[in-house]
Amino acid sequence: MTTNDVHLATVPHWIAGAPSGSTNGRRSEVVDPATGHVLRLVELGGAAVVDAAVTSARSAAGAWASTPAPVRATTLHRFRALMLEHSEELASIITSEQGKTLADARGEVARSVEAVEVAISVVQHLKGEYAEQVSRGVDTYSFRQPLGVCAGITPFNFPIMVPVSMFAAAIACGNSFVLKPSERVPSASVRLAQLLAEAELPDGVFNVVHGGVDAVNALIEHPDVAAISFVGSTPVAREIYSRSAAAGKKVQALGGANNHMVVMPDADLDAAADALASAAYGAAGQRCMAVPIAVAVGEVADELVAKTAERATAFRTGPGNVEGTDMGPLISEVAIERVRGALEAAPSQGANVVVDGRVNLTSEAGYFIGPSLVDNVSVDSDLYQKEVFGPILSVVRVDDLDEALRIVNASPYGNGATIFTASGVAGRRFAHSVQAGSVGINVPIPVPISWFGFGGWGDSRFGDDGLNYDAYRFYTKSKVVTQRWTEPRMGVSPHFVAARHQ
Image (cartoon, rainbow, N blue to C red):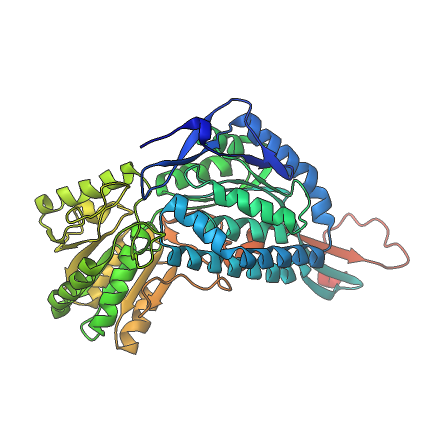
């Protein structure tokens, strides 16, 4: 790794509609994972910077909540147009700091634009319900109001899509927002803040704070933060959920995953192998909806392993900004060592390394490791039990669909699961019985379009639902009004009487 602080740009915080530095002077290096070289520095803030951002958000929250919903939607329409206009620039920022291929980064930007479109549409849910004459002269109606200041703590693997899916919905519902992105990929968040300002979002409605544990703790503990959304590992999600809930905040905390793809004997094996290679090795396996586990049913296993191995060895690993690259680098040296360690331990636990991503790498720089395929993986092994979050596909062999479902449902994670089959009966049974929040049938990565809700089960999610189309439920609170307009006054009545008798 090389660096020269004098010549490096520094990514600032974004507070009250303008770039902002840190008073503590702390900075961190932002590294290009394809080269190992430092691209720039990023400001790191703690409690003081978080307080400044929350104060800015709180000051802006009242006026923004009072802004008519159609006006808020119009602002987001302008933001959507700017995202489309700058889509190539945004994709380039993702690739430079996260490492995924430009094609994958473009897909992330496209899904982010979709999230904005859905956020605009959820405004209709704020209109509530009305029930006339629930009692004599009494009507009841409900509506939803914003929470105030909301915060998002987001991971490195989706520098734009995850933050946008949070703040676009929160802002559409009338909240202000403080975003704490991963300090490894900070530039995209600040660029989004600039585009929101260009879209005429009022100062203070959207703020960005960079930092580590200190910044996260400050957001959890700040009394003016009403809600926290988080995406990351399961241990951190569990802690953020428990601490935020104890502090009286609404919280949704999405954790890790170990998604399964069940391949039946009647499946189109070429399609299944294509799907496995794409879902296991795309983005170097650094997706919460990646598929690191293939469950091969019956006699399909040998042929499925052979076909998947062909695709794994054909994958082109290299810098994400080079045309023709299939898989970019991992995010860090720590991630590389985690993947290497998992491969080293696999044979001692009875598994067979069919394709070893540690060999035949052409790049000497950066955090590269190739796709790996490991067969005969035991469900008791470390490779199966632990979330590797890297480009390793493990194959578990079972006799039938019953055994496959038992294995999938025994996993503590319940983010996603999919089946490849030609049988409608098997597909329907799988969809009904599998314990996962997102289910695919002949689809490799079952991430629903943004007009459906999204969220895992088990240790993949803690706290409230409310992503994508359901986000308005999380980012608002319901108010129910019961009213009577009658003359003359009823007078005092100390007795409890059922409404239907009044």
